[in-house]
Image (cartoon, rainbow, N blue to C red; front, side, top):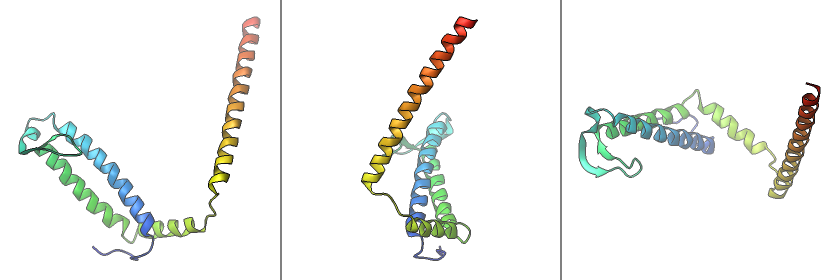
Length: 139
């Protein structure tokens, strides 16, 4: 498998690949559980339990794992191909240009946002209560 522009955008390609792979593992685990309702998929193969799936190795689990491997290979080819890789490379280049705030600045900004959210919630609750009371008196 040839990697398009090898060496560029390594971090974004890895993050994208492992994130999508984790989602697919979770999805195919669900598929394996759903397949266990079929009689043909419940035939045990080697008589031991699969670690992550916590199910015995059956035809359904083996099929799910095989599909996950095929999807993983396809994801690798997709993320390292000529269509998707340039976007990931450009994304990583742009992220390197960003000036990230310090932890202290981020903490202070978070506290300010939380205070304003709480103040807005109190204000809206008071206005709603006042309007409710006024409309009850009128009607």
